[in-house]
Image 1 (cartoon, rainbow, N blue to C red):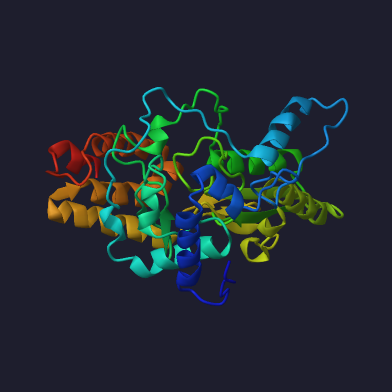
Image 2 (cartoon, helix red, strand yellow; image 1 turned 90 degrees about the vertical axis):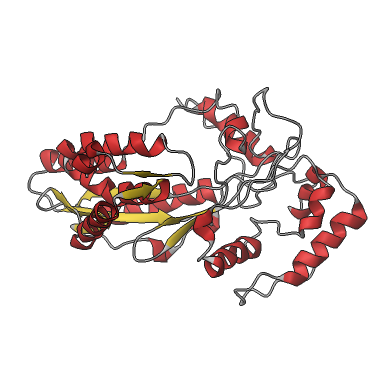
Length: 364
């Protein structure tokens, strides 16, 4: 296979052409071609070479979890499908309209995945070899500081996406409330150690650090399973080497779960009493959390624009909701209005627009 030009931001068309030609000439099935691409063999079947099996510790309350982890390391994630999933996709969905003005960033994203070995980039003609592949459209979500986040597998059309056909009956239940978790941790430490200096450090793990790959036996999509974001927050009461010890423990956990490439110093903050996490500013000394002024102004501008227009598309309404999420987090009385706007958004059909009702205007 041709060597990648790691310094270029352009999609490596030489590799695309070589792999596409190899797929046509070899006539390998999709699972076998994926195994070849991932360098899987009978002696090393791991889809992700950055992950390793862990020995089961004796007398551990979590010993039952280790076989599950080791199975994923050996064989990847093995999804279960609903009985309603067809054998092939009847209609190829188009990409979301939000990508129209972001072609350059999308190409950079694909290039990054190609360079890191997470994306298998091929010519469209290869789809004829593997009719079992389901296409998921891509979309763009706005991030702070004029940045964007690419959605690789937009769940569309409704009822016919890969996510809709996935049986989630064996998914573990997850309780995820990051702002509340951080606030409770700060409050707990301040209560237990009223005279100690409380420090906060954050590590943000971006999407490029994928965890597990899909199984080779049941493919409906050639993408890998990836972590969207892992936001790790450490809070400690300053005493001796606790900050250093917590830093090392966090990095070891990341390396064990995500592999050695997950350690990216650029995504770690310094230990400090004031730090920014989840778009909010946390102050461990005063025990407060606040919304940056720029985010409040951004939310205000979007609300006034929507009111001036008098009409809203589903995307416009979601954009306002995204900018207002911090307000609903920090000001509980605002949640009722936020929730009513959210209900109005999810009830709209994709790409639809509507005139704002009196209730919508009052909520805004």
